[in-house]
Image (cartoon, rainbow, N blue to C red; front, top):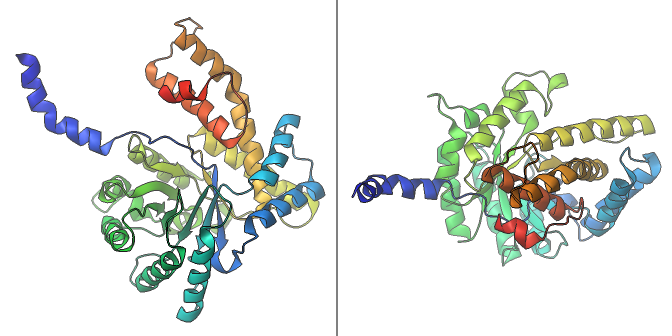
Length: 372
């Protein structure tokens, strides 16, 4: 029969597509990752960041969001100010002597499993020749002190330029812990476009053999490497948009999640300087969300109010339309918009993300949304 013949012909590609594009694994994705130098991580880091963020709002607010959003932001900063903490041994930590970094890695590993955050990990130094041995040593010391991996734990691998570095990371993870996962930082041009014209980042995802959970864009390393002057380096520069578009296509359907980078314009100084930085950060967070990047980097506690404020506003702005369209789709009722199954899943995903981050409540049952 023709059906059996085509099944036989297409069986290999069916298996390959299922392996390469398993789809999103579900579950919560943090709205941000906040990077803290390893020697600044203390048992009170989460509480301290929440208090610092609330203090910034008290001193320089009110935030320019709707009343319900401001309320939710305040509650979030008291309840769960940091969603994803990355203990940083790379650029934020710098080069120290081996004994000092060993001590910091040991102390951070001992502490990491006890911090009240939903997601946590560390950023080691790169696997480039000059920092490779230090990266390996830090991971070993940290993981020895940590013991059992906390749920959601991940290693961030910076300055990846070649597929071989990803393969090496897979080997390293295999030696350290069978369950160890990592994220790839896309902050060099060769990570996006190889010398042979191929999209290197797509090859990196496959080379990770299922251990890669995310792609994180590195704003300033990437911009500098492409020749953008310092004054114009930003998340919304054209070179950033190109790199992130390639990342987005490469990761689509693979289960690997995306994170935008950071802005280095911090909300510090006098009232006008803080509010100017807040306006910029809020605009950039909203811009990333509109482009399908639901996570980004934060570098300072005073960025937390606008991270959550812009995120909550984005989801609240879309809530009514998403509920109406999804209800009409499920009831097979016309609204003037012809939504297909893929769009219905996107609408359900939007509502789930809004629930996960605390932006709103919805009339839909979570289990029903997850089934879509």
